[in-house]
Length: 433
Image (cartoon, rainbow, N blue to C red; front, top):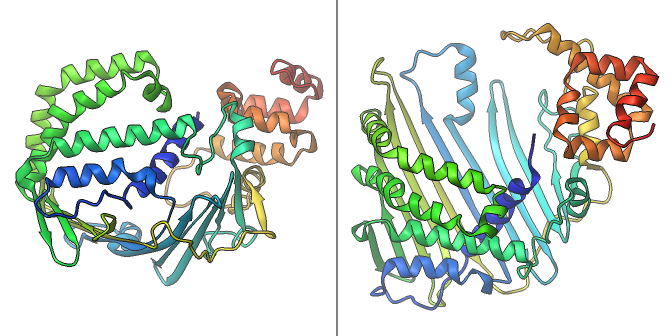
């Protein structure tokens, strides 16, 4: 069952990491220790109150040497040369952030440009559903999905702190956890992997290509992992990750068993994966802020048995500017064409994605007939007026047994066809129909 708290942590940590990537102290002296420069950039992240950013992510696959059929080729063609551009802005005092993703997809005969805006204002998040003919139904294309954090908090029974409230205890803990993790990783990388150069900006470069890539992996497992597990002795961190003390003990047991299996797997990996280039460059401007980050990675994977090879490379570029200034936002607050999460779920349940009663599931893969019947029953269940009950909606997201029961054909048949049994069944969850 989906756990919301770890999901929220990912959102928070992602946001904090993005904030952290936008600050440093005023140490632009190239003679300063490069590790200090990088660690300080994260530790000073709380000083950032607003910024704008843009950049791109480019991934390329070379799979020409693989014996693939037409469908597999069509699937991988999407990733053969994929570029995702992004831009956005953040301003804390007005509790607003926007992110706009744009990419061109190659879907066989269809080439389309996708633009996906995301807007956060206070405790509400909106994501626009792109129009992709044949993949996204007309009923939802162009509309916004709305996430209300306060409402989601009521569903999950957990108070969800504002993403803009740095002083909130959970946000403070999330940022502290990120800072501790960054410091552990950076400090366990060999000093020789870093260089500091200077032109307009101070540039800290970390080169972990070739054999250095495996040295970093070995360092993570033998040095960083024990330190990361020790971090979880902090009960606040453990709770933040949705883990229990028993989970920590299990991690410790795994750590003790790693050495023999790890080194064996590492040797196998060295035979199969050749890292041609891996380099991260962080640009720090005269005011001590990170103005740009570039990451380049290129590798070749070779199947030891078949001899077939796949090449993969990706590059990312991120620019940061207008730090601690008033920002310009281009995504307007949605007023019309807005779906909340439950409405969207209802549309999917009723077949808006093409899963209607006449949908042909024969797509060159095996689909169990029982699953077809379960789908039909679920669609029918969602159409029932009595099922549109806030208590039932909340139960769906918070009770794992209830969620699993709605995939049981016998229970679904009972709920749809036996009113007395239905009432009795819901009464066990404290719901009177």
